[in-house]
Image 1 (cartoon, rainbow, N blue to C red):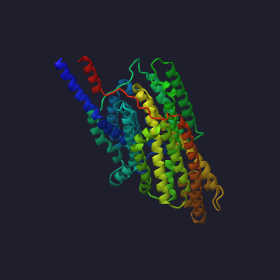
Image 2: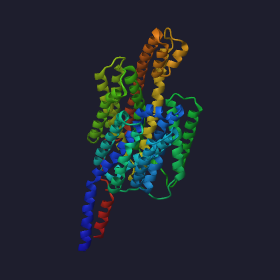
Image 3: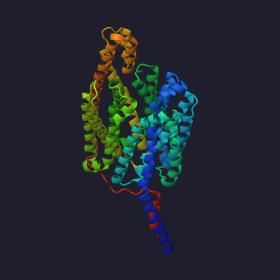
Image 4: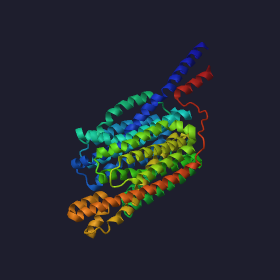
Length: 532
């Protein structure tokens, strides 16, 4: 009996160490997320250098930029649910390895086709990594109070990554060639693989029944079609066959996927989670938040550069307060959630963000740094408050064995909301911008038509016209853009207020029932106690 007691004591000490190391696990997972978040935006500043070196065509350049988010969004459900079946750590480590290999291939790509393929492989790696990080957080932090703090840190790191990407890319391009924006991933992956294998616990979900490969492929192809169609809508290709066909085919495949999951005894994704008001409302809030705001990020970048005349680096620095505010909201999110509860927190986040958007309607053709600073700080804090509360409620409402699938649904909702936001707000912006260029004195109708496509194109047409007509067109385009920005901001504010109403379906208080400890060493401790 003494030997058994000693063994149990050793396992108990090992379990205590594992519990203490959960914060180390969080650091490893946040490093993974930082890498993926940076890679999603770092290429944007390298596009001119890539264009000059590889000479891609217009379609090839589009796929160089879009293949990563398209593939990543399409495969989130596939790899999220596969991680529930074969092991989340295993999928995460495979994602690390693939991300490193694809980064090397992208950095050394000799042609546009190879770079497109490498970016698609990066998307596969990102789809492995993103849901695995969230689902492992769900397992490693079974206590909801600690998990809320962990998710807050996780979301703050995501905000940092999105902002650091363009700044890091700009720094690297000033000193090295464009492939350096990918090579920076490799040393991080070389460190993350052994550290992740050593420190991350393995966890799985319900292994009953076969994994639905057909369902996973239906979801992947269907999501690819929908995301592709939505992205083309955002690019103004609403009536194109290459927009309509992917949208219709993708929607049809997703409908078949949903019906298949409802019929199966062991579904790939337990759609009954959507019957829980907290889960379905959280997913809807994520979609609506991104729908209302992601298009504004692109429009704001154009405003800062084309209207105010700031450089890309100056634009990135102007947007940094938004990132710092988002970080602050993420770090304070756990305390706010405990004090106010999901309902008030998410609803207040939507209202605060809507207020920030209304404040920004005071932007004009002249620079107002104080107004921009105040508006961006409110925007970052409100948006992160909303997304934090929604993500935390969604994960906490999902069963632990479905953590990977739930995380994948959340990330897919984020991507779909972002794509739909670009399409919707881009359409609103164009509808408000174009009429102002219809009757500019001295400007031919053909020039006005070309200028109505975008502000950048209008500046190009004005430069070619020159003289008084060119100056008039430039001023009219700038004024019309600012008017369109105001209209788009008001539409976005309306969507955000709709989200505030939707959030009223969330629970009033944060439920913190005792949860079973999930780490493997702790389960061994319980077995040893029983045997003793």
